[in-house]
Image 1 (cartoon, rainbow, N blue to C red):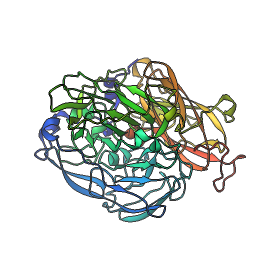
Image 2 (image 1 turned 60 degrees about the horizontal axis):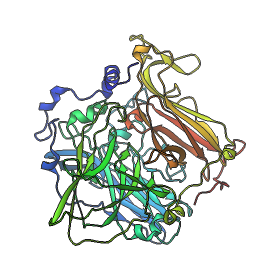
Image 3 (image 1 turned 180 degrees about the vertical axis):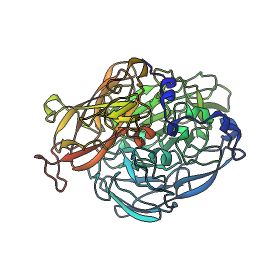
Image 4 (image 1 turned 180 degrees about the horizontal axis):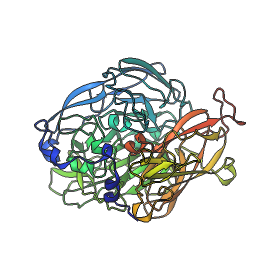
Length: 569
């Protein structure tokens, strides 16, 4: 079985191949595709993205999408973005508030006709707005990723956040099929923070967390070619990011510097807004010694109800993790101590693309100044922390709750052609235009033959896995890892905690490694309408690894959203 990136790259069409080596010496000066040094281009104080808050229960703002010119590591880039920046503004709201966004698309008209195959990358200047992780309506002008906002148009996005919505860390990005990866990797992403320090069920109300400085860290993989632009999908193949030499950014900065006092506790909201990288987050000295403890209190925006203490936290595309970091005391006689936030080495087995990833610095942390005596909310790691138990965001799904039919999702990549039954199977005839590399869910590329239907007020068990395309010979199988993501309704799953003991957590994105057969549970509440599930390697989604999901009222009728008896707080 061929599972490595070599097998994948050999089978890729030109639209998704890694950059050609000969491109490294051409293009604009300073934009060469060569390895960059983080120390040379980083080292400036960390900057938080500008913050917007509501007035009178509504956060009203304009969001302008246009090209902007920015220097990144010596390269004059020309990229699409929000309001002329590499990262979008942070939107801070409370449960019950409404996001009212006037999105102005000032990009140029699409240069040519649409491709005959909807799963060919296209619509690079058409956009929309997705509130990743929010439990909100997928219909109308809300979190509707099927809506298109063409160039030179103005569109209103109105997203009402339910009064009982969990507080936590979410994010937004563009989500037009065919251009999602290109726009997100250009910097079109920002954070959404739902907060309420007055609610005793919220993490924001816990005294030790409320006292901590709240930092939003949006990790991105800003992609641009040797001309400082991104106008194709050449860099999205296996190894493309590494071969480009580009550096990850945090809020648009290369290796920013955080400053903490000894004993200080900060809340770091980590958001993986990148495309094709496993971030294995750890904080150590430059030689790897003296690792900090990352005290995780929430996953994908949803409070665990306790604190998990890790030496490293895994972030795959789409993941979020809220961690409390506490600066250690200074060594005797020292005035400061320097540490680094690293993307720690990742083995091939644990990485997103099944290829080993080297250690890479993401940020510098300087500990200096007068000591502080700040406490963590829990004395120990794991369940049993009274201070956090009341903050658990979701009610677990029991066997008795499983009133809906079981669901299966299989991600597939391979040479395939459509069969008489509408499914796709392996093919090898290079002269057949229908025989091509396809990215599929359950042996069908997007949009398949119709949406998967779920019933409002029910819950069901899901099996998610990666499989070869049916009929593929053993030596032609392409099986890689995929982050499964579903909109609107999160899911419950089990995973090993820091001590290896299995725990139940809630997420909206989870990596599915080859050989995994993940069992998830989800309930469908509050909203009917059509949304999507997909692989969060966004160029996989753009090329067909996405499926429509429709929630209907009991009996299969359509109408206005109605409350569900399975409400979370």
